[in-house]
Image (cartoon, rainbow, N blue to C red; front, side, top):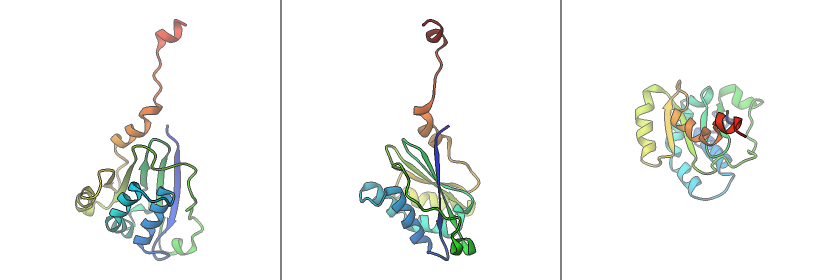
Length: 158
């Protein structure tokens, strides 16, 4: 099982969907400029649309990398204004280390156009149905290096 970090961002009406995505990008890039930040900001309009639809309210924006997995949720309406459940603190690791991927939850009606729009800008940033888990390909990327293979001959022969 891989380590998972979770963050919850205040969204509308506390901040608009585009500013919410920018805050998420700031967290993921640790405020540093570079190719990862450019790639994440290139999909601002599409990501803001997903956030405005309140898709990440109960289904996480999931970030996988060579390190721990990061799940990002958003608060809306009165919860966003009050903000007591928000946690926008910096992460203690680089969430975009190595071969990173971002999976955005999306309403089923919008999934086709969101996937098409994301594909124009990035192969690392994808969308999935709101009710679907992160794809097994993403899971395999994250956990492949953490798999333990038991060799009984080697163990018993020592």
